Image 1 (tube, rainbow, N blue to C red):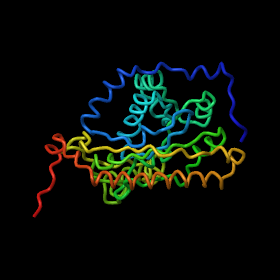
Image 2 (spheres, one colour):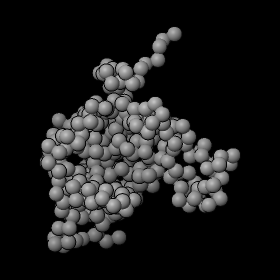
Image 3 (cartoon, rainbow, N blue to C red):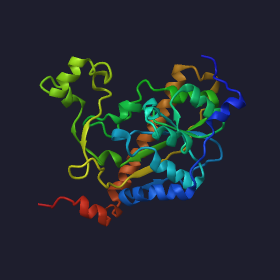
Image 4 (cartoon, rainbow, N blue to C red):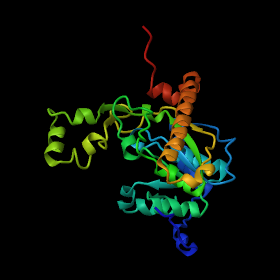
Length: 293
């Protein structure tokens, strides 16, 4: 497929008015109070040239992206252009906020190319909807089997890839029923979804069916777990630019990104195990540790 190109005048439609840093601080303040996020690798992060920031989706995707995105903006002045699912742009008011104030774009190869031609950094979640519709045992599992589009674009435009690992959010909710439970033949929901054809159609046999979860107590409010984020080292694609359309080369780069994230997960797990600050008062009160027998 030929390279997507746009005139400078066409690229102007991707302009937006970024929020002030004061607004960003106020916006993220309640989040920091509730989750006490820790950010690793940010101080040493090289932002001298644009890159694709690639991260893992966590359960339901409600705690993804914006926590480290805001911190990156406050500390480094980089506001990531996020590529989001088309459903976000079908919601009145919300679509105007994310487009005009946050610079979010509908996920497409054309829009990705436009951002790169503007020399801006962007954020992608290769796992997409499949990765937020968790089943039991899916925590921190990357579902990128056939997702090489982000690698192809990075190679085509010579962009570096920066892996960003997110740990903690998977524990913010408890899965009460996952797709396997909901699609059982003896389940009323399962029978309805099978009868209507939604199970195989819209929900792809359960692959895109979100779980029923429980947050704090019996509410949908996420538990005040501590969150950890890690910015990894840049992965260069420049040398592979001539092979941007080669599936084998794309898989090679994708494997490097996946491996980097796995190492970052393990490092964050170790940090979390040794972190005593998670016993802050809000967690001591709302998430009491079980008594030892």
